[in-house]
Image 1: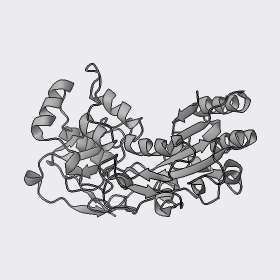
Image 2: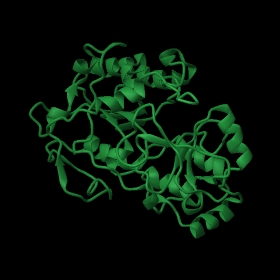
Image 3: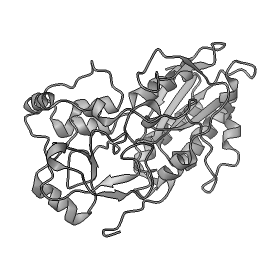
Image 4: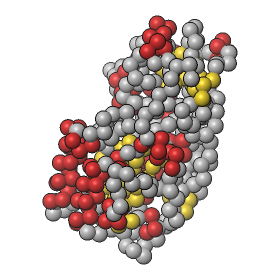
Length: 348
């Protein structure tokens, strides 16, 4: 294969896990591929790796880059990107590593690509990550309401799924007693909680929840977040649940929209709500990866611009953005992903 696209399990690197890195059994497939890569007579010419923020400080990443550096001629561009930078009101900061073997020193756009051996130097557990960001100025994403279905559309999807998306009040009370925190959203929010494989399984884990009837509910109490998550409404405060407020899970269709999937994408009818939500939570943001693939697969000598989402909204054929000058990722984005998990205490 000329191109390897890899998204190894994130649990060995996530801030909410034990961070066992290469010692975690779930990393073994990646380490095996790294060994194979070192010995191949006809290796790929391009590699893309996606994982959680924190992977860039891992021993597994060091081994991957060492394998590439040992072959000579490889260059890399490493990013920290979030869907909110691509016009999507959803939090999912991720590490993306792009690596290719055919970057000429004088090629247009070569400033993006650094020799892999250079990326390795000075990178240790305590080193400050230096990751690229989106090459356009950040703008507030569209409101969540633009991605939410109508009541009639939700009813049709519930009929197809054979279940209700409303979270029972007893489940909400159990969650409130256990953790006292929900990821509650209203339609004017310009952010939403990260979708994971346990989405839709409360009281286990976390799930982004939508207020069903905002007129009936009225204004909700606001609690400051430990750290702001992006820009715009809903970024700096949490909506506080109170008994009687009706909440529902995001439908699979709404989840796919937030992950940048095209409207033509659909699941086999036999898959239920939890199975669909788990698959979406384990997937990648399509809008971000499609933009990165244009950079990774661009032929030598092509113009050094990559299409930015129009107004940072609709995905494809927008004005070109100059990628020849590196723009580094927001340090706060990286530190939120890497830093220790801090929980908001009840009553604070």
